Length: 122
Image 1 (cartoon, rainbow, N blue to C red):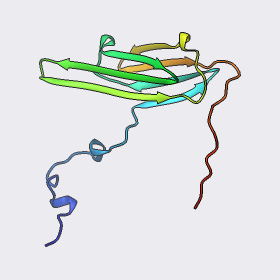
Image 2 (image 1 turned 180 degrees about the horizontal axis):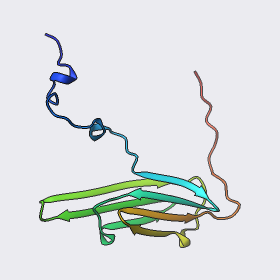
Image 3 (image 1 turned 180 degrees about the vertical axis):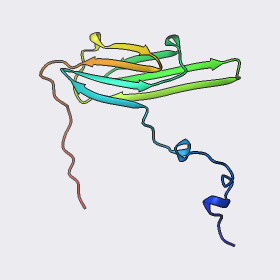
Image 4 (image 1 turned 135 degrees about the horizontal axis):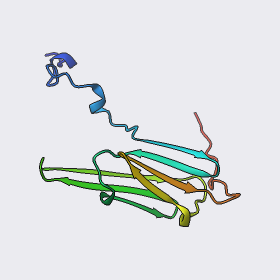
């Protein structure tokens, strides 16, 4: 007995874009400019009060939860970001506008990434 192909599997008659089933996510953009990291995260459907942004030992944690009583649906978001340079944690700023969370993380002067080189063998 042959295994079903994509066209005659359970999704065969459904016209879903393949992006719905991707495991990766491109919901953010992170770059460094003029002495700070800038992180933009797409988070449509949340209110400012739904979003928690915390900083702990070099890790930025973004969490959000929204209850939609009209649709009987709960929306959640959670992601962590680690930064390769020391950040001035007292100067971190976050703003949420039109479904985009933008976090500015000023880098402390003259800091470099901590760590070590890992040898790759093959």
